[in-house]
Image (cartoon, rainbow, N blue to C red):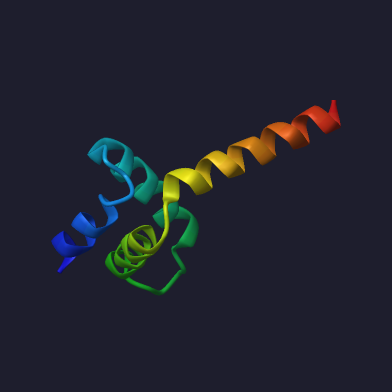
Length: 72
């Protein structure tokens, strides 16, 4: 059930609002045409349960900042 997936993802993200924001962004990026949006959302929540999405987003933001400094 999706509630089990949400509670599993809350192990890494304590703020529910932040979890919703991260899940919606990830769902938009991972969604494939001709698949159900619900299945993609469930897959995102399973991934969040397995790893810390906050740490990954910080790392991506740091890499983006470094690339911008190099370009300037």
